[in-house]
Length: 279
Image (cartoon, rainbow, N blue to C red; front, side):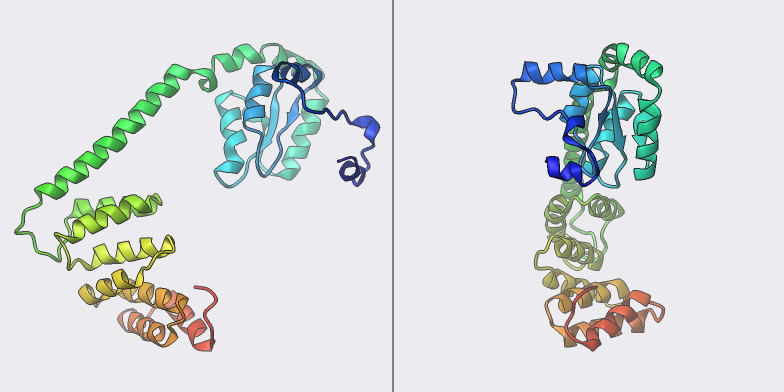
């Protein structure tokens, strides 16, 4: 650890390194900290909230993904957006700014515990209500879809998927809820076995999950032979399995249907050059 700091010309006399200590002693150490520098790309989270509770503000860097933005959520809910940096240069600039304004820092620290205690971070009843509402909404959504499928008339054309079913499948697909999509798609397929759209969405979802998607995608092109995207998806799945000749046929069919299908031209060129490496 000392060697890693030495690379940046930070001598051991500037460091205070502690061995394992119990929780009470751990929390008391926050009294020796002016403010905390949140690590990145993965922030502290638990230690960030601990710091706020112990009167220590936390400077965090906003990342691009869920995990790397946890510090952003914590500081936003604490009402401390001025402690959120947008990039590394901003992080450094804010660190210097906060470190050189000791009067303002002391005033913030003095009332920080009371401030966060009134924030959503420590509002357990509010969190419980929101969690309850989320569970109820998920159950209601599931129940509505189940009832809607059960109530579909047996006289519905087997290739015409109702709009509410299409919307539900797309909603699950866009949200990355592939397990739910797969379950519902197979349920719908018993009533609409000739829906090219259903098989297309299911096939795309299976492919994203790393599952066997080719049978579903073959159903999609069989029941929607004029859909260029279905042929493209099948071509991509075939190419990924090194079935290159069949993939070329699918890409060419997609281009026949849509002469401006740029991705199909791109994938066709890659496939014809040799072993498939990307799509």
